[in-house]
Amino acid sequence: MDIDYNNCMFQLTDASLERIIFAMEDQSKTTLINLETGDLIEADLIPPDERDAIDGKYASPPLWDSRHGFSVLEAFTATVTFPLELKVALNTALRRGKGVFKAFRAALSADDALFQRFQEFKLRAMRPFVEAWMNAQREGWRLATLKDEPEDIGDLIASEIDTHIVQARAAAFDVDTFISKYASSSDESVPLSLRIWFLAHLENDLHHGEAPLFLAFATADGTNPLMIAFFRVQTPPGALPICIIHGILSREDNDGLGIEWQILDTIAAYSQNMGVSQLVLEGPLFPASIAQEAEEHGFKRAGSILFRAL
Image 1: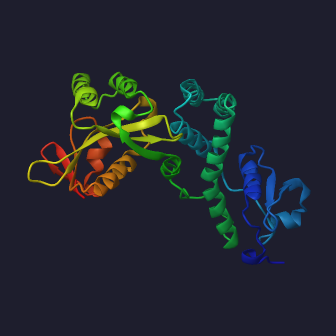
Image 2: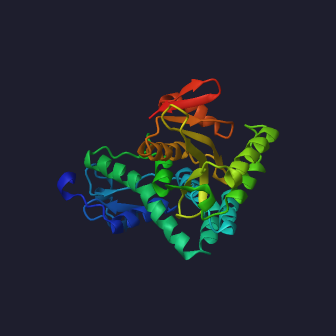
Image 3: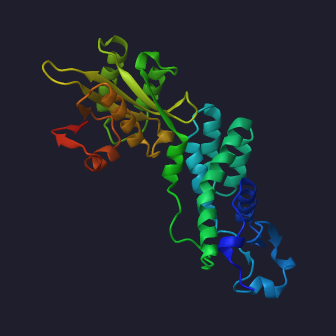
């Protein structure tokens, strides 16, 4: 008998999602899903005529391979900043090759709160795959694989991260230490001498500048920064205020997060509320992606400076 999947298919609850994810990660690939109840059943226990029926009520779980699984581990690790030794342990596990998933879980087991956050992160990462699979079942496609990724992993990272703005001298973390780690990184996009020279000016402004220096920092835990941007608001004589951003700094293990524009958008919104007329990016301390993508974000170039009207 044909099944009306739109009326009879199970609802995706947290419990059914966890069951399906268990089946997706099961390497034996012997488990099927009851499309009416969402329950799991061993394929050998289903009569052959029901298992092979075109419109039967059982289906294989969504395709999930080690590539997908590893991308979730990488994305989650990018959001971890503290404790530092656990961040190092997770990065070490990711470089293992064989046994990476077991090593990653072993490292996470040292921190119950972080382990729970990873479980929630993984559920959010895998839910779009399950939802796409359910839609395929409803439409009778019986897809064995998904050609398009249901969700950009970068969007998932962004959903984990908040951006805060504080006066640089009032930051709850050690700004000087963060600058020092950036200065000693192996980033080759900016020559070392130029990077150190510009950072020295930035540190001088931080501690001795008359105009207040602000920073916007991205964080997954509310305190420890993944990435920071320094900026100040100035009012030239006879002109409207402008916001000058002096750079976006990230430690090496947080490179590639793709949240630079999230930080800049937060600064732009903050500046608009202060009546700022122009957003200005000045200096060499910006990721290469900023210059490459500036135009599509509304920026124009004047010499070495990028600017955008607010």
